[in-house]
Length: 484
Image 1: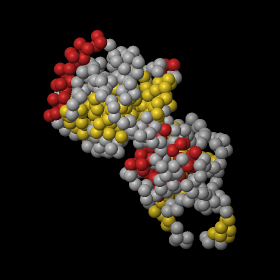
Image 2: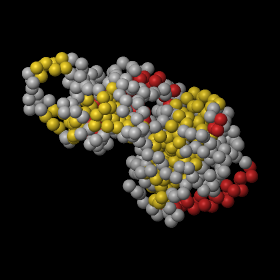
Image 3: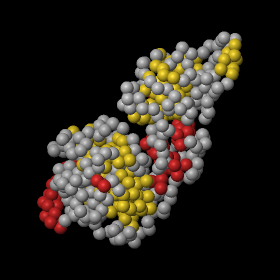
């Protein structure tokens, strides 16, 4: 009954919401009356945001498909009226509109929650009726008891607040007590599931929860969109998975629930893995999905707009650098094979310096480390290791970036131009008397500078609010080269 959704102001709740709450309240008694029947098995499905099509897979493997939704909406699944059957809902990120489909017909109730949040469907009080919650700024919001304005949900099951950096939420009754827990995916790991001893590594996968065996306890399934494959877990405490299932296509979003009696007989979605080759100037759903995935990996920080521009090209370059692939700006059709196994090169552990920059000259990458975690990764161009004639000193110099431990000791906001050479640098952060970390118009896919550490202009703009005077900066060829 749970669907994990993407990340992403308060709206006024409509009269329809009050109607929905009344319907849900009246249904509590019905849900209790059906409790003696025992739980039934949940099944999996997919939502295609590019078409608004749902594909629900029954226990017999048959597919039931229907249209409900648009590109701007994210899927949710829940038992909204306590009848024991989960039905679809949609959350629109731009304005917070929620559309709930009731029963097996086409009756839809629409209302507003906060815009710009992460939605999740959950039963947090054990009454058998799900509600839509939205996480904004680390807190869960829902309609309050009066039904007039959003209010904080306090004292909720684990976690009580959404951790910073979360990209998905998933709700499930992981301990069988009849009350859902809300867990979060943060930097590729699912946190907050009581049945697990620690985080579950999911990478770029999207988890959903469901009761696969009718035991009354939810387990997990993770959909790896690039491989069009579900990994289904049983007995979470044992840490093992029990089934692999190929279904759907890259770009689809998983859902799970007790969908009741499905008619079946529809065509399953065509299995498609990857996006195909993409390059600057391309646009569309494949680019939009690629941008979303690169955002999850901490490589892309611009708008998810479906336009393959320079920002996307440089994020792809960073992906290639990290995976040891050819340093190219185009997305190759084979690159999708590496997404599920994506990992950054080794980064030194420096517990005494939790907030710092690491410049990996060997891989031409810069890592922003916050609270001892790499939160963003940037492509760079460092010293080209060549001799050049310096007009200023009228001598030959060698373009090499110094290695070692440094501190950012100066900052100049905006463009700074050299009257002698004529070049301009953006948002320079000095780390020696001669060299700076700065934005530049030309950041080629190889070391090219006179010794400074180059960034794209948009990355230097993004970083300006995250760096600070005195921030440590380590520059090395190999992770063990600089020991603080």
